[in-house]
Length: 295
Image (cartoon, rainbow, N blue to C red; front, side, top):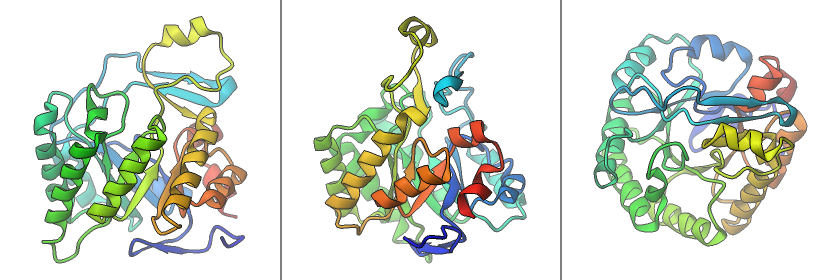
């Protein structure tokens, strides 16, 4: 990796001005692209976008654990739906690279989930630069079942079939859970190879409560949700390294999870990531974080 991460990098046919992007979950409705582009990000991943608007899970649903630089959230894909996202994407002025993180509506049964992903893929195709298929969020009931081998193969094959009919196919990435076993991850990598998708986003939030310094009763009082931030850093890096080694460095990886500093970014790059994304780090370190990381 070049010493200066501000150097542009080309990956899956796109030219990123640096290696740092904003992870999905921050700008769910593509409302703040022009403002966020001023902070130095090379790309912004909007969403998760669902076909219909949905309120998400009951509040409170977002909890800070400042001693550990962590968050627990159970937002539940709260967003205003794909029509609203399209309106905002049409209005944006910035030419920053945009990824669309796509997911099914909570009330869509799993046997019909592919219809949701296909609708989103078709609707957003002309307005974003790449797609991230999200079947790994721990806050949507039964969503993780779509990570099962047969379900995932069917979904990604269907999206790629549509993609190949387009004059300009868009890169398709898969966002994976840090809670996969190594065997499940091997199955996922096999499916990625079979379907020919372009990359992987590693990782989503975890349903575990790893590396926390707070008393158990406080954590239990918070309840369910995905843990992000510094406690996830080592697991994310471990999975990136495994994927990089298993694929002989041929599968582009966006590294997410516990990136709070330039050193954390470098750790992900050294493990095999080509780009990184921040979310919890941006919350705790503030808007100056990106420029510190790329200079």
